[in-house]
Image (cartoon, rainbow, N blue to C red; front, top):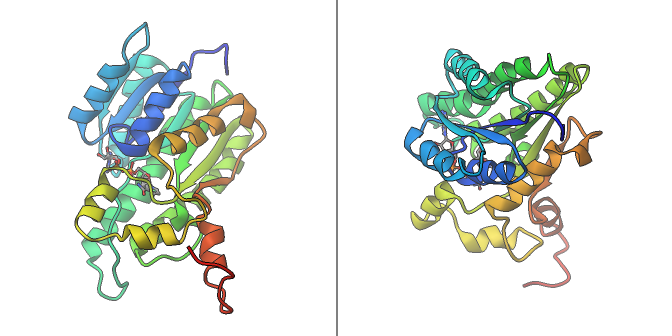
Length: 264
Ligand SMILES: NC(=O)c1ccc[n+]([C@@H]2O[C@H](COP(=O)([O-])OP(=O)(O)OC[C@H]3O[C@@H](n4cnc5c(N)ncnc54)[C@H](O)[C@@H]3O)[C@@H](O)[C@H]2O)c1
């Protein structure tokens, strides 16, 4: 892709992991389309990048609305050219809830944004990649994509995001388009900061189930995304790349019924 026009589209690019990804892909030489329902913050991120000949534009869109995503995809193509990279980071992060007691309207909204929004963006922007016969899509999964956690709409939705990623990898592979997912553990972005401040997440419990002593920062997730978009990953498609500070291994290891040989 190095010699061709490079346009990266990031949904949820106004904040957190999406914003870090926008900044990393801009540093890698892409023109950027920053798509977010928070247009004020999307504009401020885009404005901070639009220097030195780089094109970076902000677009207002609710990714849960398939027709709105199709409209914004047409605007991006008209303004910047067809997408060569898509990263789907727009998402909502809920609190613990019981399946029997949960609010169904909130459940459906979560599903519509986290799964539906990913599907809508992948469809709209993959169509732009097909004629060029190249492209890379990275969906943002989660540790929720791999194990059951008690936040049902989010947990099931993130598992579905990875299955969608695998299906698309096969369907789009014949057009030379790669589709992968990155699965972060807890990352200190505005929603997690707010939940910790409100007593809805316990940092001591979080740190007890990781192998490494520190959590990833948004730029660490962006690095993994940038790798999957790069030529170095040209033979990688259909995978979930965890960026989890050893969460999967630590959860299993520390649940062993015989106890662990040492404690922190
Ligand atoms: N922070 C974490 O601990 C963590 C862990 C694993 C996965 N993730 C995933 O990473 C992604 C980004 O999360 P974050 O922590 O950076 O959160 P964030 O709130 O900082 O960023 C999410 C962005 O998505 C936008 N957005 C939300 N709903 C939208 C909609 N319907 N249409 C368009 N834009 C919308 C928000 O305005 C915001 O700018 C999400 O998919 C989340 O599930 C986050």
